[in-house]
Length: 432
Image (cartoon, rainbow, N blue to C red; front, side, top):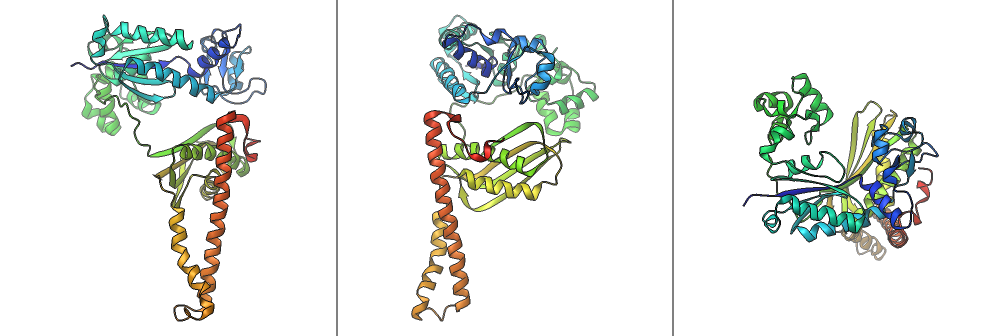
């Protein structure tokens, strides 16, 4: 049976979801129809653009640029703060509709998913009719639009959904790539970054068609394995399955690109507190603990540096993770201005390893407590016993501190879950 894959992508998700919610609550203006952005604060002229309306795009506003630059292009620009609880609500509803049409749905981000429609399209006149039904229900039930790409594999479905927007359906089957995909600039091929595109241009390869007609051995010689992969993509070759079940996470992380370079340790520490809190909350939500903690930075010269530590225990508390990251950052940073900070936790386990540590140190405490009776004097001297007790007390003190932090995290998680992300925060984040 021939495969039939859909890629469904929400048009300007954050802005669309904000607009849908405003209209539902009686707003007279649809912010998708005026110059508007999500992210940053135009009144304070700070932050970056997370999503933009078509009128804002027409003014030259780009996703990821500072609000100050966007305002120069569009002085009448309206901005709205991010509302992640709202986005999660709309994302769940969006995926819920998709699951009504396909038995296998792979959500790849908050606003996009792949559907394996193989065989099911026989219930419709053609593949486009099923996509029309999905698009119509999302628009009527949820109030926003999507683009849907249709093909025989995930790569081409993804490429098709990125064609003309918004609210469009496009096909891109193998027999169509010569006319629809090959004339496009090579930079528009999936997973072709700016660096790879520049190298390809140096080789005289400017379009996807040029890449498809190149010698894969020649490409591999210049771009290593990426060259061979891009050649396959240019020829529409990709066979990965649509995965209905989420793969087990290998790590949890978060990073942020800053509107201005960080030059002070205290400022970096406050940002790390926010990043550590979000990562630790995800770990706690999934009942996981991490044994490896890594910090990553990108400096003003776009050079990346990282530093990690493997723990002899596991953790998912925000405060403890923040302390570790700050120590790693101090060891890593040479004072160069930074534009990106990141945190990542790996070596995940479902088991809190601290109880095992307590068992490991308990015998030392037992031995010292019985030393006064003279029974254990033959095993080690008074000095060793004092050191053992001191070490054990320090470990127990650390464990009590950890338990206190864990109780605080649990309380904060419950408050945020009930009243929203902005209902309460850590004092260290007030000046971020």
